[in-house]
Image 1: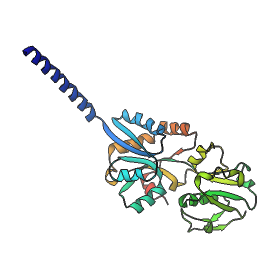
Image 2: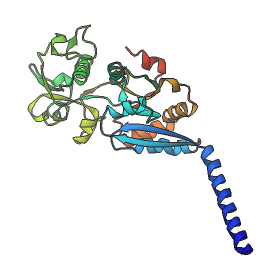
Image 3: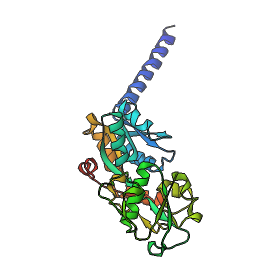
Image 4: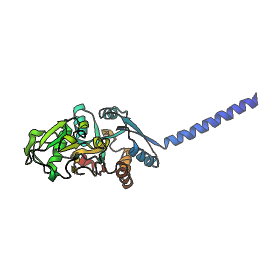
Length: 277
């Protein structure tokens, strides 16, 4: 009996020591949960591998919409999220009255003007029809792209959500044809050109780097994507380390290679993210 008792005690002692060892390892690792929209985690998996070497266990949670990741962050279910543009972020925070803030920039996915009839904006004829996304933010963004390309001039009051009524100069008498974002690639055979969101273009088999006859530049600050945290966590070392890892040169090269140039990595200060206009 004594021999059996001693064996049991030794076994329990070994289990306790093993458990203590596991707790020690856990204490040396900081867990960070980050939410994204969409199912492609390739870029963030790359960041997670780098974070592991820094003692950070980065867990990626995917969402199928643009609402849940912000609400989950505000409610403490996430530590960070990374999926949205500055302009969307500002509108969402104001509408839902939540206390989350940007702590770093990631990429810009430029919107482009595509045509299967013309190879340059100069070739677009008089009275051309151009398809644009009909959602308020996307339409405003599309019109700003046409303004930047020199095809139209918008009023100074147009802001980020301008409409065709804000066009003050239209030398080619271009007709704006609004439609659901997902339909803009399909409209290309029927119009002179179509403005297509980056992700929609990729899904349609277009190359956002090579195919557009005009596209946004990396200075389109309202449409830079960001990493967000709760306001009380702006100085959290692990969270700031995630931002740093994302903005390192090797990550930039990986993003460009993975997206074939469709996404442009950006390094914008938090001050510029907060005051981008």
